[in-house]
Length: 311
Image (tube, rainbow, N blue to C red; front, side):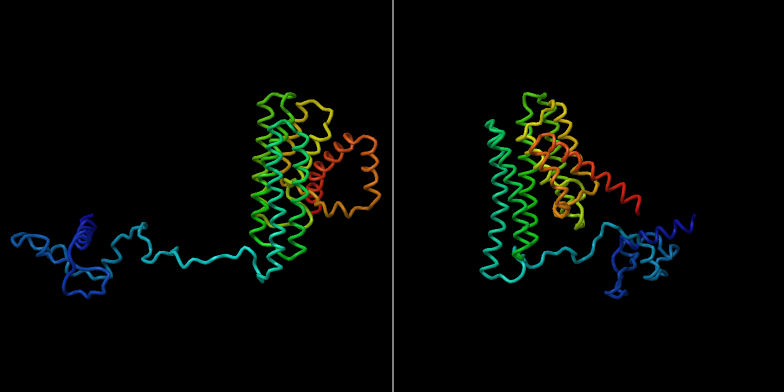
């Protein structure tokens, strides 16, 4: 104990003292001159052995604070660099194509705002038609971007923001306006808020997740908005409580991890499979619509179960 205490006092004296003139200026540590720490008539410091300590011993004993950062900041601001919105060759023709694609995205955004305004005025059917137009323009901008060769990260982010406005905000507002009067305001508000929250989660997850060319991970927001808009236009003959439950189920399906087939794969189905829905729509469009929606929602868990069995 006495030896350890003596060594601690030696380190303390070294830390608080001045540099000795005998040490090299490049040395990281310094010894203490005793005549500068204590008066001349005080006891000498020879018993503490300060003069016998080497620079390596002192450096090994000195504690290092983790709060001390590097001398040069890692994230030092560098020269500003402008990132082009349209990668690749910047010709006039490509700029026009790029503007046309983004005009479709802005059209979807504008129609979403128009749907909100119409729903606030009570024109629920007009608002639902605006949502259908939003779905059409949302599919058009992506198809044009790929066909014209002007797909870009800027366009992808802009499309995601427009989808949040059209399908994450406008669709719940339209559904809320259609449910008012048939259910309580609290139930309609909770169901529509759930749609908005799940749409935001779905879009954010889509932006950062790896893409699968065959299936969606959860029901896409575009398809969910189309289902809600068609349900408002058709007017399903069910109670308000059942409609609220269906809206909540559709919201949870958006953030689920079940695989759902993309529309391109559904179009490639044999033509005779499309004959039954067409005939059913001519007989009873409401029942046919309900069967198709329920069948698509159930297909996700079935595909998930099949993939687990074959894995």
